[in-house]
Length: 125
Image 1 (tube, rainbow, N blue to C red):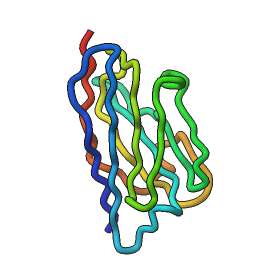
Image 2 (image 1 turned 135 degrees about the vertical axis):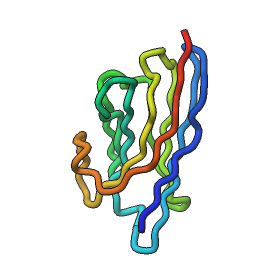
Image 3 (image 1 turned 60 degrees about the horizontal axis):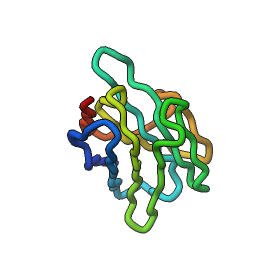
């Protein structure tokens, strides 16, 4: 059983910052070998790719967050982070952490094997 638990969401004013964390656990889950991703779902919209980091620490971002968000990982803590700066009201969404076995990243939801429950981020104007 693999468990991903997100934290760090909340309410912030436009222009502010938040840092999301996702702690992974599981007896058969080797965190350092997995690509970790962040997705988000805004009200009335599909869940969309935000960012991913491979086990080699290559990072990828959606165009909408590039330059504002930074993904990182701490393999010693089995945790992936998403630092979100210069937040905009359109960043309001539930943010989900996801894990994908293997070397390569993907922007597709279907390619991720494990998901967290999500954490709400609300950006007020």
